[in-house]
Length: 275
Image 1: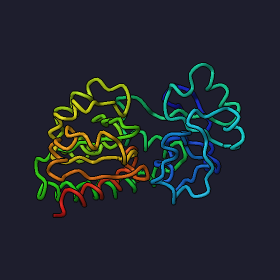
Image 2 (image 1 turned 180 degrees about the horizontal axis):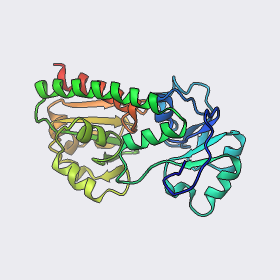
Image 3 (image 1 turned 45 degrees about the vertical axis):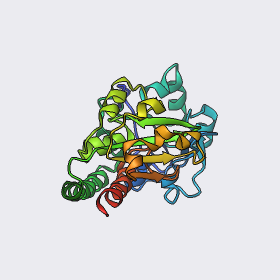
């Protein structure tokens, strides 16, 4: 197969030991249990919403150290973005096992990336079945939202270390809400997304005062944050109207993929359509 960077890669027909750091959602969705799982030390840790699927799977640092990858004894290495194999890293990895860089970049949708991962592990049929099921769920959810929350706007915030971050409209849960579900995007989200250089952008409390979202989904990693006691926070429209819904680090709101998005759809329906 030819990967996204043009490497010709001889991938195994039925890989048994796959390293696919930060691609675990896609792998689990097609029935492949990776041999290691992505982690960030002293930060969010692992993708806890996948903890049942990745039970007893050891962690690997997000930077994919050469020694740790070697120790995992993979028969296939999947890399999620071009930057992860710069400065000679690709040649190091390919000495360990066939190394395939999946489709990535700002123009690549999560569906394209999911299909590419599935193709690399020879599970295209399973991916297509999964997408069909997901799209049926999506159609049903959109009908329900159109009935009970028509033209309502939403935003996703993450609060950690007394700082707020807003998800970009084309990343993680933003892609689901504004893309797949077609929910209304507040002006502040549009402004922040235009300048975004990462999935999550820092946003000041002063700016949040102007957030006119009807609903806010909050990933709360700092329950005792001083900002929650500030009158500016209390006067944000959705907070004031009791339309703020909180989730913890163990939720899927910071991530993307068919499993994450299926869970997020359930959360949206529960919070936005049930009185």
